[in-house]
Image 1 (cartoon, rainbow, N blue to C red):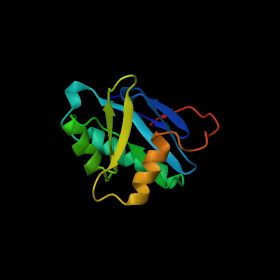
Image 2 (cartoon, rainbow, N blue to C red):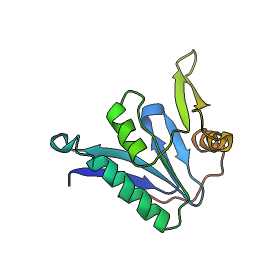
Image 3 (cartoon, rainbow, N blue to C red):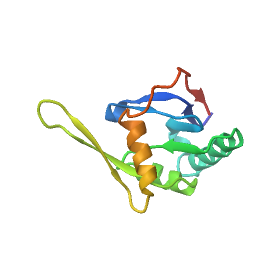
Length: 136
């Protein structure tokens, strides 16, 4: 194995930003992807994402979420090459007494997509039944 990623269909913790994503029926979240250092730069990660999204669409899923760190430009390029489009930016303020998380739309994302991302990430949806991630 030289590249991998996980797929979740219900909810998952996004530890880097201290959030949980809660998915609706027909949605999936791809996360914790990596390519071994000796194989980077060969577009293997992009190919993995294309395969994962194709398979998920074949299974009837209509929306696939994925996130990248804003400083990880190679990952961002692979995600874009695989056909994903930016929807929002997540920002965190560390104001006292607690941190605040915000989500702002990423132009030209449709407003409904941004609202759906806010609902999924800011826990404004009903909690789904437990189902654990599957490797992709």
